[in-house]
Image (cartoon, rainbow, N blue to C red):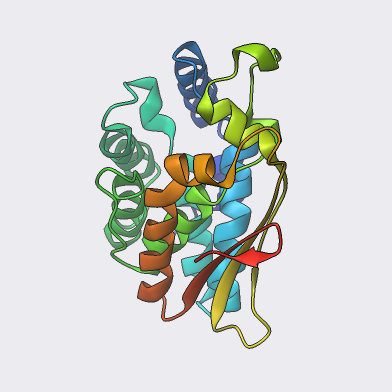
Amino acid sequence: MSSIVTYKYIRQNPDIHTYIKNADAAVEAQGYTEHSFAHVEKVAATVEMILSTLDHDERTVELGKIAAYLHDIGNVVNRIDHAQSGAVMAFRLLDNLNMPAEEICAVISAIGNHDESTAQPLNAISAALIIGDKTDVRRSRVRNADMRSFDIHDRVNYAVEKSELFFSADRSALILDLSVDTSIASVMEYFEIFLQRMLLCKRSAEFLGINFRLRINGSDVI
């Protein structure tokens, strides 16, 4: 059974728009960085880049982008276990749109396994989603305008002046290349926040049959 549910349709769905907006408002009230449309669209673009480069079929790429766009809606319920809440919400949304069960399984398993506390790459979509989500570190995610009151998450994200994820020339490795202003946050502080996420990216890349490398200020650190 083929599906008419597309990434374009999901992006334009007003109910989904409302869930994402309110989920981001919930995490903002708790002091977290931006998890709104800029984040989910960037993650979707990264998932598309990874899966397309690795020659996955067009529908798999489409499902990966849908999973990426929906992956944080569970924050509207609670930040804790938001991956699992989001998976349940996505099931109801996609089931109501008559998406085939096999496609729903691919999407909700990726959403339900993207948070680092319980994350597990189960298939290509989930592996690409984990990498897309965990590599989205950038200055524009910081909401706090007062640097004097930055916590470590604010400092680390704000310190990242450039973030680029790309394949090596032979497509054997994904490289996350960061330029970090160490006068704002040290490399050690970056690892204090992101080490578990970077190791998860490494594991997800290995699931996809490639390597993951982290480069900070021109030096390879993973």
